[in-house]
Structure formats: C-alpha cells, structure tokens
Amino acid sequence: MNYFNYFTEIEEEFVKRRGSHMLVSPLDWSLIETWKQRDIPLHIVLRGINSSFDSYEGRARRGRKVNSLFYCQQEVEAMFQEYTESRVGSNQSHDLSNGNGSGEAGSERSQFSSATLIDYLGDHLQSINRLKEKYASQSSLAEVFDRALVRLDQIIKDLRTSDRVSPEALESDLTMIEETILEGLREGVGDGMLAELKKEGNQQLRAYKQTMEREVFDQTLANFMARRLREIHSVPRLSLFYL
Image (cartoon, helix red, strand yellow):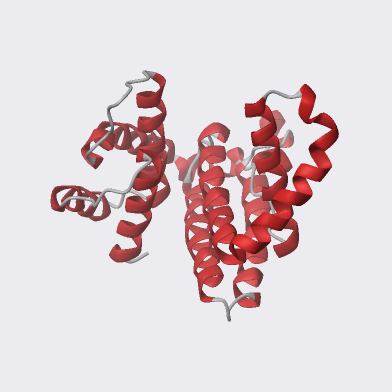
C-alpha cells in the first residue's frame, strides 16, 4: 500500500469517528508518516483509532471533540506492541497454531485456528476481487472493493506469520472493512434506491413498529437496508459469526 492510500484510509476513519469533518493537520500528517515508516499495518492503526474513540465516548464528554490524531497515538502504539509480540516465535509454533502439528493440540483444530481463518478470508478475498471486476465500469464501487481487498490481503498475510490469533481484534478489523464496503454501496446506489429500500423495510416492519422502541426500530430498519444492499450486490459477510 502506497503512502497516499495509507494516509487516506487513516484520515477517513478519524474523520468518521470524530463525527464532523475536520482537515487533518500537518502535524497529524507527520504522525501518519511516522507510523508508515515504522511499518505499522493499516488495520492496526485503524484498530487503535477506533479503540481510542470507544474509550473517549464511554466517558461521555459532552460538547468536546477529539481535535487531533495524536489523541490516538498511545492506543495505536499499544495495539502495535501487541501485534509485534504476537509474531514472536511464529516460525517455531506456526504448524501447531494452524492445527497441523502432532499430538493432542495439533489434532484438535480450533474454530479460529490460523489455517481456518486464512481459508475463510481467502475465499472472501476472491469473492470481493470478482466484485471489483464486475463493477469495474463503476469507478466508485470498484474503488471501494479495491480498498477492501488491500485491507483483507494484509490481514491474511499477518495471519500467516502470527502465532497468536485474537478473534476479538480480528472481528473488529473485519467489521471496519464491512462498514467501508457498506458505505460505498450506499453512495453507489443513490438516494432513489435507498428510499425504495427504506420503504420496503418499513412495510416489512410495520406490524412490529408499535411494540418496538424507536431506537430499536431504527437500528432494525438500518440492518434490513444493509442486508438488502449486500444481497443486491452479492457482497459476502466477513464477520467471524459467519464462519
């Protein structure tokens, strides 16, 4: 991944979590450049940003916003340290972690073994690549699928060289990729299609609306629309819940 794409992905994630657009400062740009020079993988940086905002929002500081990417620095560093430590000794234990070693541990393949996850994500990588080719004439969608491919490919490469797998951290990474794709689908179909899907969802949920809290209803409607968008475009779910 070149520096421009690395910067853009980080900037967009930061702006999205902040909740309002704000230009990333030259100082923040320098921080991103430092992360890139240190070979901190993109998904590790994104994981750190989201963890920082989750912690910040949990403290409910009303009226205050995060104004600099430096707020996320310590969390990114912590995530990177965990990532680095997970790769220590991977060459010696790789076969065992993949469930291919000898003995009891090797004979019982975990649902989340490296080999299982690599196969699972590899299949989805191929599916998304086919979608990129299918929508090559629609530049916005092709770009979205290309971004997803880059992130997913990096995750698979990391799984091949890591001796420990954190399903929770991996699920967070995959969720971010799914949200990127979904956001691209919403922009790609336009307001007209979204209005039709919303109407369809309201009709499907009409019988239950009176018994649901508004927040629950709105979330259920949003989930319905997201599912229909994925169905229309044949986009697979990446979440480990579908493994």
